[in-house]
Amino acid sequence: MDSKRVLIIGGGVAGMEAARQLMLLGCEPVIVEKTNRLGGHVAGWHKLFPDMLSASELVDSMSRSLDGVTIYLKTTVASMNRLKDGFSVVLSNGTGLQCRAVLIASGFSLFDAARKEEYGYGVYDHVISNSDLEHWFNTGQDDRIPDNPSNVAFVHCVGSRDLKAGNPQCSKVCCMTAIKQAIEMKEKFPDAEIWCFYMDLRLFGKKYENFYINAQRDFGVHFVRGRVSEVGEDIDGKVILKAEDTLAGKQVKLKADLLVLMSGMLCNADTSSLASMVRADVDSDGFMRSRDNIFRINESNRPGVFFAGACTGTKTVPETVAEARAAALDIFNYLNANG
Image (tube, rainbow, N blue to C red; front, side):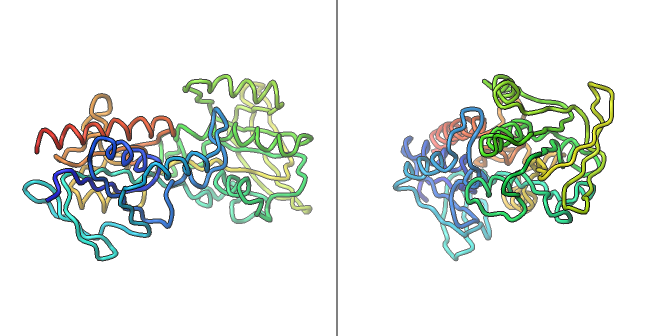
């Protein structure tokens, strides 16, 4: 068995950065990615808050740093067996390999906005998700987005902090994503009025509060604290929103040309099967369970199995990259201690 081979399940930014660091440490990382490209969800995004960095440039830069790393695209792990000193793995493409350690960097899924029927996703012509809007930013292709909207509304916490949807946790990135997208829409349509309906604004990161203030001061984005209670459509195809402004203590009714729903993060559908394969624990929120949530978040309950990124819970890109680097070092130390 190669004493330095590490299997990385997932080729998003966590898997890519971990592979880069492991390679620099003299290990032999192997990335297995189920889609046809690297970069995960970030690869489908347009810009990243708070610096408005190009997502494609980040992913391209990270990809270029992986020269020499074995990468399998459109591939999954078919089976995995524990050996005395590592793992025997068979991939869905028939490739068999042995590795000393496994890093799970399988990321997350986006909440299906159609599950919140009251918002009209898939029913009304001009209701889209945050992911749909990012696709439009990148391609300009989406017939649901008007050519020159005069009012654009964003609804935060769609499928997050929602007991009925079975997803009580905060998705952490939705507030900032909404603000970022609101700014981008204002840049594209300077005469449009942009509205954000939110439960609470959770702006915890470096420069996040400044980003929010700039959205109001420099771009004139309107923020309304209150949950949208009703969404409909008028005869002209306009989206009609009703909400309560809890700060002003009054009801709000808005006619919008476009409604954007901020779908939150969920654990991947294959988390349970993947956890069963490596005999790792799954937490009450459906994500992978770390040994603890403070000091050993990159470690699983099984020797040789490690985590990085959003497979253990909602994460920002900076958090994901930092965890990937930490996980690479944990794996390197594990290999040396058990060589």
